[in-house]
Length: 192
Image (cartoon, rainbow, N blue to C red):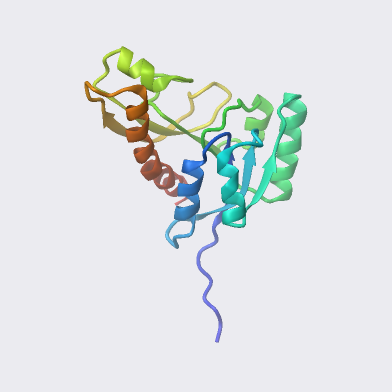
């Protein structure tokens, strides 16, 4: 009897610099049949990134990159991704900016999660900035990556209410929960 093979999953690399909670969440969703991606590679610019432990736990290849010569490094990563037949890159708390050439080579196939309602609060310290401006809402955005920081086409956004008692830390926790919902949904949206 012939074994039924499910739909082909898109080979995905996740780039991290820190704890890797979005990475862990994406690994979980990638194992569900209805999510059309698999996590095949974890790349980090930080050899002490806590998220690297998921490489061993889930038996996923990892690569640690020293970002000393940006163009040379980007070229090396590109070649590695091509060799591994990676079709999609998910940035998840990756604290390095990719070169224009790198982005051009993976055009439309790099997405990022950002902890604000873009186009508001590009870059860092998003929660503090939203609270200081007395915003009623913040949230998170999944968007395509372009050579300009946090400006690519928006795929999905989720709003989060900012309470009067919120601190940057409490707001970050509330938003992170929403990030874990929105990121797999955004991948599913662009791949279906």
